[in-house]
Length: 301
Image (cartoon, rainbow, N blue to C red; front, top):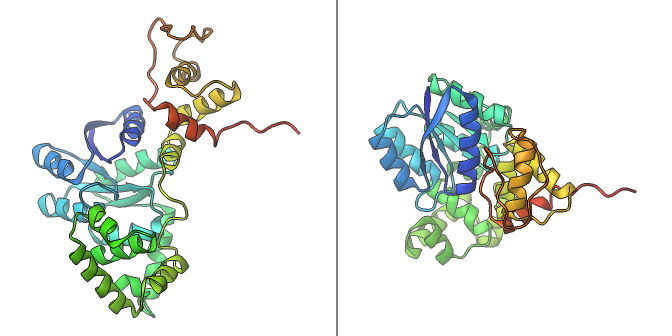
């Protein structure tokens, strides 16, 4: 049995990933962590085969966490699983010791295959990651992009500045002092031969180094829904029936879609379904409503 730790600060995504892994049959989730500190402690205290590690952790960047993990457990397989496109972090993650890099919007089969492969000591390189690595190799012998000369902290500072964050906000997000962030900014501007934040932002956008859309609750839920056919079909059923997007209505549709019990008319508000009932991922009503906007059935012409 492949023992897996899920390290992600979003409980909804952890639950969705755990569901996929449990269905594989040859692997199990032995723990969850919502911060870098929790991840490091769990790895020290338990025997693991694979760590699924997000890049956006609340107390320490995932790349920095990866480096610390590889110092303590050099042979531990770490699979980076993130919403960030491969062009942004894949090369840095592989260089830091990651066994693979996978986008959260990849198919469930890709996740299961990736876990199995890295658990054997091999690397898992998706087609998108392979393309990003090939592009990096192609430029290695010619003129390298200026951002490739930056350290991981400088690179993250650059991306956050381009995203519109103030130095104070960046300092809070990276758990550093404003003075330290200012030093990183000065260094990266010098290395990249840029004059100010406007030129920096132009460079980042031109080279597509930030996501095309912000990481909102809807985006996080979309990634989780795509990872589960049952969740996706449940949302479609809920939307097609025009039901209010409450957790209760979502649960009833989940029961029907899962096929694990006989579908019966939904009980009145406050009623309780009887028998063995499969439990849907627990989502708040407002988050279900956000995601349902993407699953509304097309209106007839």
